[in-house]
Structures are given as structure tokens and as C-alpha cells.
Image 1: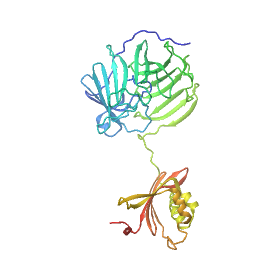
Image 2 (image 1 turned 30 degrees about the horizontal axis):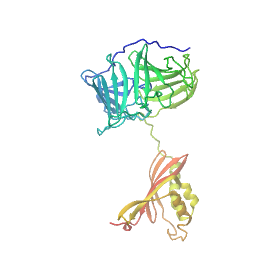
Image 3 (image 1 turned 60 degrees about the horizontal axis):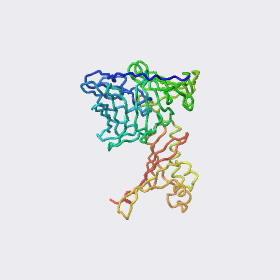
Image 4 (image 1 turned 45 degrees about the vertical axis):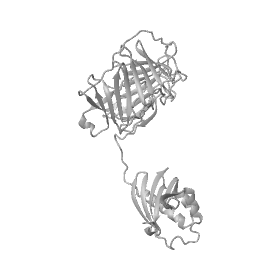
Length: 420
């Protein structure tokens, strides 16, 4: 049965601002948000300035009224960020004037840049009751623009237990909540702190209704530390349902510092569908020492390149060279009278292996090929190769359990070949 939202006005309190010091706070993370930019920017997992010097963090600065005026982004973890959950810039500056909240975005050099929504300026409007009623996007020339989700503005109206959200493009046409999720008019349900916790798909009569795949709502659960631990999908009858990605519930696990380390997804009956670790540089597992087998294979493939030239073996050349080979040496452009980097393509190398040494005069009768492995780290390696004629540095990469040469720079061993 459809649920009708009554048109009863409810005035929401102004956002709350958490402070541990008069002007500045430090947080390990931002509170996750995939519902709406209506949500207030909030830090979670507070830390002290001393701890912040040695870990990823955000710096929140406040004015004398306790309003957030600046966020510095020193967060360098690599976990995936939702465009609504990340400021996506080095510095966010917020100004409050005449019922407007204006947000500008800067890189580390102080240049104006776009955020993760690909806009340069965000302007929120508050009504006389301090209710956040509108958000508009602007470019560097202060002209209205659309985000990378084709949204130019958000409009919010208060209803009992909900904030009604509508989104518009520059043509004033209604736009879905995101390009990949089909919710049109939505009802945002807030928690006791005034932060979004659920999103409902509404029809023109503001009744909760299913979208084309049978989803009418998604809900979030946060733990006491502010970690986003569960998100789930429901139909108009308030029963768990599969979303377009064929799961009903997602659960996230965190370490003690609030880093997301595991994602699990379940069906409507609680059966695990898929599970995957979430990688970040909060905890890095380094590679063990290279095996003797890897070292032997790297040596074989590296020397195979020279042997293919020396022994007229294009099959071997094809075997040792990666499809993305980048082979470069020092050349000279007489037209511009300048030294240049001269490239040789993989196909040329295979062709050279067919007949470049057909006269058997390019190498001595017993070639002197000397190889030094400079370093191996897991699936990448660096090699120095010295022959009778050349000094070369090779990069190798291990793909599908096979080592191949991907980069190669070389020069003549006799340095007198080059201008002084």
C-alpha cells in the first residue's frame, strides 16, 4: 500500500557543529553520505593536532559563531569515495551572507578548481526559519552550470518527518537522484541529529512508490562512532528487495581508526552474495622477497631480447616483448639541430629480429651479454643489460604469471658516438 506524506510544515533546527577546540577540529574521516547534498558536512573519529601530524585527516575551522568556514583535506587513503561523501579538493571555503551559504573550492596552490561534482561554486539558500531550501551550482564566471550528474539545482521543502527533494537541470527539467539510480522526487528522512538516514522515491502525490526495478527506499545505519555500517533497499510495502545490482543489504566493516576494510552484500534472506576487502593505504601489505623462479624468468626474458636479434628469432622477440612496449634511444634531429628521444615500436623489433643480423656482422661470434637485476618488487622489475655494443635499462612487468619487457631505454656503449 502506498504511503501518503501529509503536507504538515515542520521547521528544522539549524545544523549542529561539533567542536573540540574554539576554532579548529581534526578528524580522521568525513561522515559518509550517498543520499543528498542536503546533509551537513560532518567529521568523525576526532583526533588531536599531534596525532594529525602522522596520519590522514581533515582540518575543520570555525568562525566565532561556531559555523564551519573551512575544511582542509589531508586525507590520503585510497578507498573509493562517493561524490556526495567527499569534498574532492584540497580546501573548501564557506562564506555566510544574507541567508546564503557559499562554498568555493581550491587546490593546494590556492587556485579555484571544481569539486567531485565537477562544479566550481555551490550556493545554498536558507529561508527565514533557517531551513536549507535550495542549492545552485555555478562556474568560474558565476554562471549557472550543471554538475557531472546533469543537476543544476536542488530544491528542498519541509514535510512531516521528511524533507522533500527535487532536482533540476538548466532547462528546469526534473532530474533523477543520480545517473545510475532512478529516484525522481524524493523524501529524505533525518535522524535525531538532523542528518539524512533514508531516502524514499515519491510520485507526484508524494506517495512512496517503486521505481522500475521495484525499489522504493534505501536506508543507512551508522554506529556510535559515525561509521556507515549498513545500507539496505526496500519496496513500497517496506519489505527488503533486490536493487539493480541484485543485492538487498550492504554491510561495511571498519578497523579501530574508522578505515573501511570489508564490504559484504546480502540478498533479502540474509544470504551472502559477495564479499570483498576494501583496500587503502591505511594498512599496506608489502611484497615478500622475489623468488628464484621470478629472478630466473626475468633473466631469461631480458636476455631473450638480445638473443632474438643475434639469432634471427622473431618468435622469441614476440615472446619477450609486451604489447605496450616503449623502446627509446638517443637520436638527433638535423632539421632542428637538437637531440631527441627516438622510439622503436614492438612491430619494428619483431621485424628486426627477422633479418637485421642476417649478415652476422652486428655482433661478435661469441656475444658478451651481461645482465644485472637492479630490483624486483612483486610484479615489476628493473634490469641493466650490457652487451658488446649497448648499455640498456629494461622494465619488466608480470601479467598473467608471465614476465615481459614493457619499457626499454638504450644508448651506444661507445659514448664518442654522441656530441659533447
